[in-house]
Image (cartoon, helix red, strand yellow):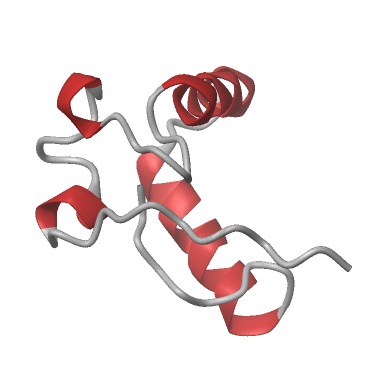
Length: 79
């Protein structure tokens, strides 16, 4: 949804995600938002086969879709 390449685990990536979340998520509704995003990720925004045509966030919300940057993600290397 946010289209970024920063690692979220530490530092600037984490601060950026917190700032985005504070602007996007109404205070006190984090649990509902998290559940909704997990459902979206499990059903529409699937990394290997994104289902953008049926996604309710593709217009006006999804920065990847707006930038034309929606591509299937490569498989993660196994460690």
